[in-house]
Length: 116
Image (cartoon, rainbow, N blue to C red; front, side):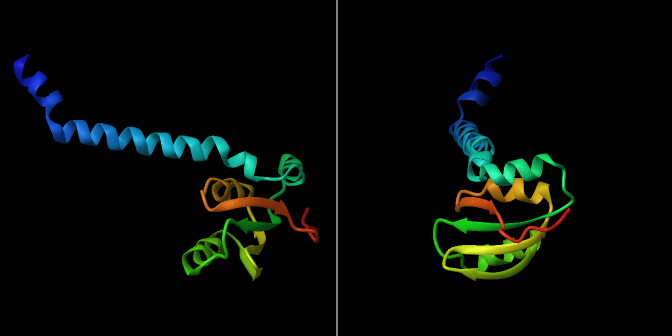
């Protein structure tokens, strides 16, 4: 019993527990607030169950190489204007994945979304 008590009180264990709690809270926050980054038009379109959609991803700042590479991994990128990237043929799961990134400000349905 004494060994278990010492183990719980060790500074390394306390630090790891705190680090895991902070990481869980951060990821939980992003998971819960992700849908609010999608516009109502996009949520309605995703509700129809399409295989893929065309979207405009607006970041909080102009995307840099890291952000562009991540966007290219989930869809076909058709360019960037300011801080908005045009992504085509992106799956609904990838849209939800993108919405959980802190640097994404808004995801909207592209005006020319003709996918069915």
